[in-house]
Structure formats: C-alpha cells, structure tokens
Image (cartoon, rainbow, N blue to C red; front, top):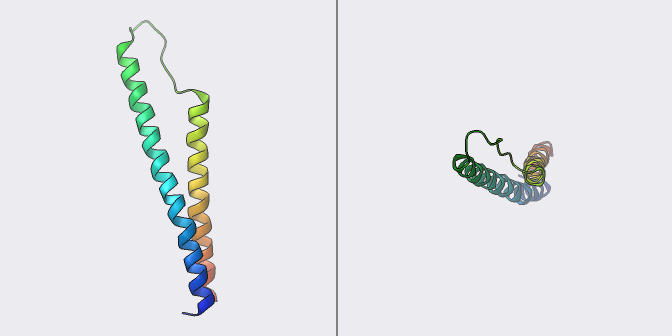
Length: 85
C-alpha cells in the first residue's frame, strides 16, 4: 500500500469514527425520548389527546442522523478513492 493511500485511509477512519459515534448517540437519545414519551402517555387519561415529541427534538434527531450518515458516507468514498491510487 502506498503512502498516499495509507493517508487517505487514515483520513477516512478519522471521519468515520465520529460519524458512527454520532449515529450511536443520536439513536440512544431518540430511544430515551420515546421511552419518556411512552411513560408520560401511560400516566394520562384515555380521553386526553396523544403526546408527540416536540419539533425541536425531532429536528435534532434528524440532524444527528444526517450528519452521522454523511460522515460515514464521506469516509466510504474516501476509502474507495484510496483503492484507486
């Protein structure tokens, strides 16, 4: 493996790890928010309206997923480019 390919693979790894961590943390936060919402919903009476996540929380989750998948996708492209050298 040549030095430029090794450097590109290292860059891909440095991009992929934070992206994967962001995906993991976003999924944990989403699960916790849904569990909290379910607990709040069970305490309410049947005739009251359903509870939903607020818009800011949903946006934060979507942004976390988008950034995480963008990092992992960029790392995949960089790694693929390193094989072309």
